[in-house]
Image (tube, rainbow, N blue to C red):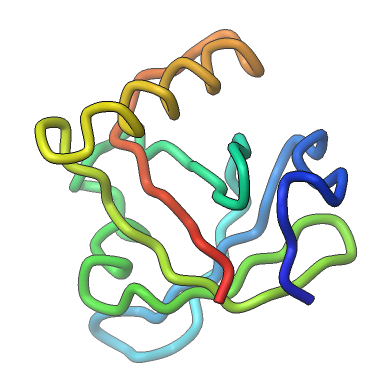
Length: 112
């Protein structure tokens, strides 16, 4: 199921992100807070590039996402503060509005 923010999933608190381990090649699942805008989802790496899951995405951007009962394949992109300035700031602002904090490196997730 290709999920979009309009499906009501945006109100959920967490998504489950499965990446491919960059060393092992095995699936690695994390629970992480997220926000939605249009047909995209955004998560923040508080540890920036020290986050293992983020480094997995940099190696293999194809991920699996589970939100409530919806599961779908997606492509994750680490946003650049200069090149992607608008989306970078938007993701941090939306996280601030939804959770009361918005620090971290934004990652954009687009359903396949």
